[in-house]
Image 1 (cartoon, rainbow, N blue to C red):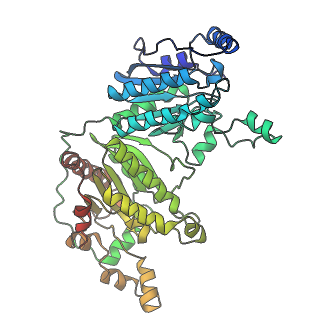
Image 2: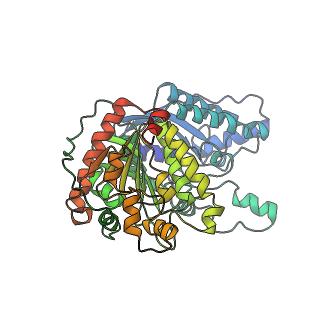
Amino acid sequence: MARPNAAALIDLVLDEGSWASWDTPPERTGVSEEYAAELRRAEEKSGVDESVLSGEGLMRGRRVAVVVGEFGFLAGSIGRASADRLVTAIERATRERLPLLAAPVSGGTRMQEGTPAFVQMVRISQAVAAHKAAGLPYLVYLRHPTTGGVMASWGSLGHVTVAEPGALVGFLGPRVYEALYGKPFPEGVQTAENLHERGIIDAVVAPEEIADILDRALSVILAPRRGIVPVTAADDGEVPDVETWDAVTRSRRADRPGVRRLLRYAASEVVPLNGTGQGEQDPGLLIGLVRFGQAPCVFLGQDRRGQTADRPMGPGALREARRGMRLASELGLPLVTVIDTPGAALSADAENGGLAGEIARSLADLVTLDAPTLCLMLGEGNGGGALALLPADRVVAAQHAWLSPLPPEGASAIVHRDLDHAPEMARRQQVRALDLHRLGIVDRIVAERPDAADEAEEFCRRVGAVLEHELAALLDAGPGSPADRARRYV
């Protein structure tokens, strides 16, 4: 399988003729004659003067900074000169406020330079962290192979990280492992596909498609934050006073639209992300970069289709949600959370995974988040797993959505020792969106006419218009204070 080198990848991703190199000749002071000769041979073989190329160009007309690894130069290894080039380019991208695209490919630290090369990981990581702290996008494309200190520094710090199909991606190179331990590294672990399955990277993308996904991500991340003129949100009007148990049963209809249909009908752009980036992925949560009309956001939605009896939403879903919260903070984007869950997992695995702590940390992160926040109560809202996504500057609810500390059946079992009193308990506990609106917990209700399941597309488009309208106002107003967010529950 032919894989593009640095120059070919630049040609694939950037607009024709737009590439401008930022590189200056590397300094080669204090190197041995033997190593100098090896460097000259690497230049002749690869056609480049170091293992990293840096520069800028246009991608779909948008100016971007680029750092690309070249495996043909000493297996893409990072020495002092290539680290200097990387850090210089990252710092320039930060000064000029450019999105930074990184395409590493490397066997890791350059062994000919040893520890002085190894510690360059610190400088490179600091430069990337400073770029992100400036609110600038850092998008990573991992190529075959990316291992060692490169994977453990600039390869693993992306806001969005995707990888080449079949790429060997990991920390310890398999050849090193076999030499050290006398046996081959297990197959199928250090692959792009396995990392995606485990929630470490966001997608596996062919080189020919990388420009498209990068452009879509930047169209959300770099969308205007001020002066958005949204479509006029539908007048909420009079919302019928639906009986509480009727609302609960309607919210549980199998054909009720969830987050996937909401995004299909209501979003103008969706870039799915995947997992925590730290080895967990829960199908009960959908995370992505999304635009509703012109309004951009980081989107966290509890996915009713992904939550099943044998795999309910677990603590990993909340760790995934907290990744989304960090993204919103780093990128200065509003955060949209969607509540639609029959409840978090009640199991030994959930307890061992720290479910209660993840609920607490999600609540704390949301209340203190330095980005505007908007919560949509879309359907069922059972227990702490639902509450974990509730705190927000604005809360919108579908007419038949509800929020309860337990399923009404569970409340009935505790109070009456039977399930028969579930409808009565739901009424007494004031779980309905209408009740929560009266209490000041919900700001706005989106009517169902008469039921979201019976008008799925129209309902989702109506919700989308409300979300765009609310997001535009939040972008102008900025994030609320933690005290203001908590005050609605007094």
